[in-house]
Amino acid sequence: ELLELLRHENPDLRDIAAGALATHKSSTRLLIETFVRETDSELSWRLAKILKSHGVVLDRKNLKRFKTLAVRELRSGAPRREPLLYFLRNCDPKAADVVIREASDDHMRSKRWDRAAECLRRLISTEDFDDETRYRLSICNVKLSAKDLAPNMRTEDQSLRGFQVLLHGKTFPLLARLKSDKALDADDIHYIGFHFSQAANEDKVFGDQLLQLAAARRPKPKGKRKKPADGKPARRKK
Image (cartoon, rainbow, N blue to C red; front, side, top):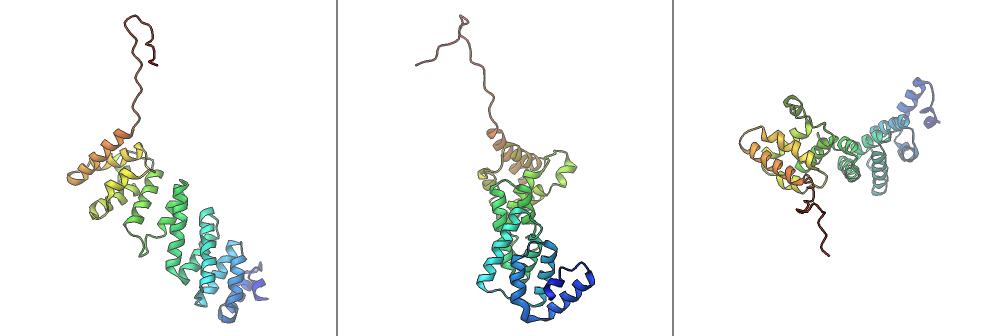
């Protein structure tokens, strides 16, 4: 059977089987069912590319199945996420973007910043890479940043570049969002603020505001309790 030959150790036989299946549009349903069940990433890639040649248009039921599979694989970081996203993007680009956003949201909630950033970077070249997506990617990047204050390091920092685009765009409420974002700690805010405070004009004003916010968020040192003149500890009031 042609499907079995896709697993053959001989690459020539695999290519022959793939070429034959690519021309047999009647095998679309069988290929889809095989793809859903398949766990091997290499074979999943072969199935995804064969199905692309069929010009598959998924019905609502199958679209939901593949979206669920893709989100699960993106959440786990499994290798099969790549062929699944490739297939989904060829069938329904918007559905693929929804899957990526859903997985990135889950990663951000769980503070898996590297996986969230990986998901969001997939949207950079799409129509859906709006200011909100740029902000979320910049948040992930600043959480992953070494936060080196050296000028050359800050120049190459992708998070600072993202925030700069948002600030200069003048339509995104960047200061308000940074103030309310619970993912950011005092060190994150200080790093962003320091970078912009080294510039001029509106960038410096923005940076100074963030530095003030960072200072306010830092825990204040606890002072020692003063002793009374007789040297005995003060009694607590009941």
